[in-house]
Image 1 (cartoon, rainbow, N blue to C red):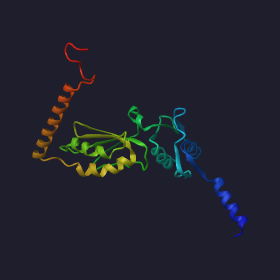
Image 2: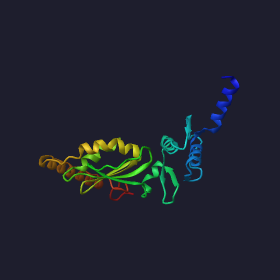
Image 3: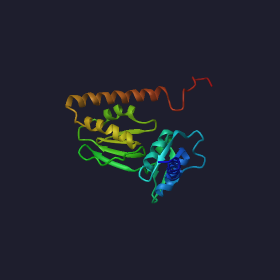
Image 4: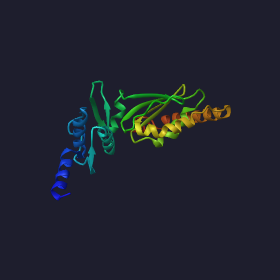
Length: 218
């Protein structure tokens, strides 16, 4: 193969390939490939939001690559109620987005979890008698910086975090979803009561508005 043909093929590949290095360019290229419109605040992306290497995008992988790229800089993307319109926001704002895609599961029925790093609202209903408070405490270290986990009465766990994190902790949840014995239940109730009492003591000694001045002093 002569040099002119090699150069011609390389030029053809580089001209047709969709690549990006700056995060804002990856958003633009993904939009071109998928037809999805992304909404985000003006000047949200910083000049430092740039990958070390160029990302190669095509119509099949663009959304997943963008999801990974956004997560590198603590951003997230979620679908809106409008068709083919998504919103991008800083990860710290996840608590203000109540309209995240919701996935409900239990030990026997677990729907497919997306293979990406987009945030989801995951609801897990444990078996009767399972102590979800202990599960929640053990899972917190596995969550991302802005992820949240809530245990509710009735054996329900709610996790708000990236889909990839949910996939990682789900086997742990299912393995721990075992009803407690009477002795284990009594020990768990005693521990929860002790934790509650400690919280009351902390609230009494450290009020939300800070230390109060001594009587007669300002």
